Image (cartoon, rainbow over the protein chains, first blue to last red):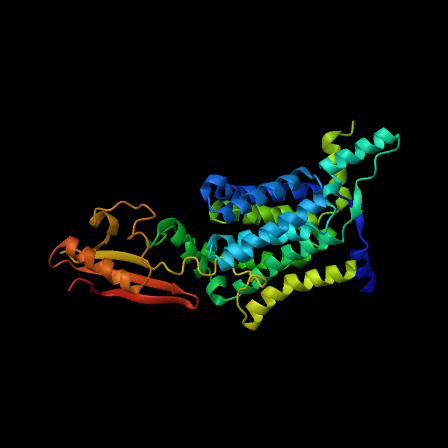
Length: 275
Length: 127
């Protein structure tokens, strides 16, 4: 157990997966908040300050310029939005689950070397090395922070499954109520077998949500569980109004993957091996 | 240092939902539960109306058509939130159908514990 823990703490590897996650998370944050934070939306001075801080920090993080500082600043801005604007000022849409998972993800990202790849920081490092006539530094760094991102993702699955472990949900009745609320209002859905299908979907969802949080850490199971999780989120995304939640969770899968495998996959994409 | 940060982060991630979902805590800026969609669909009763015909048969009633209403989602009649709104809606239907209408209602409202049956259509809701 101690060896496993030390392995997590001392883990090093390619920074490409975290570079991709960094870019993806900022784009999802823009997708969620940019519309509300454009300057004309609210001309209150404090809100203007928030908008400027949001766009400045997130742009620097997207580009990977002074990445660590930008990441800490952007996480601070998101916490300001979530805790103060959301809880204290009553902007209730900023304290939803799909917004908190973004806040948490950007926070844990700050503990990773996400600026080591696909970034201005990397480009400058390569340029400096070329000017000095030495090889470019390797795209690698300490990866202990990726465990935080993976645990965050697993925590969502596990506690969501715990919450669904009730007869109301497992019988399919909650899904019937949800689908009617979303699709037909108070009129019943009269598709034959609909209630039975909801029961099957409910049980399957809970089983998957109990399996994913542990299984995604197991390399041999990942090749089956990652596609399963992607399908689950794709269905949620198309069928339910989950906003940015699904895409954020899918991005967090990068934290489970073997960093070297992601690195090699990018190499293959950019320079496919010849046969 | 890394060891402390990693352990602290994991504790932080797990403590919020454990406290709220398993120990009866409540949502705070630092404690988050993962109860997605728990309340979605709860404030929406399921209703089905039938009308008795003179020959004894019954036919389904399209409640919105009887009231001359469209079915946009923001329409107040689209989702009936509770038993009281179901009853008010039923009375509006009775009024639209005219005197003597025999309108049977099958309705149930969801809650976190299950469905609560409001009416099983044993008698007309038009009195």
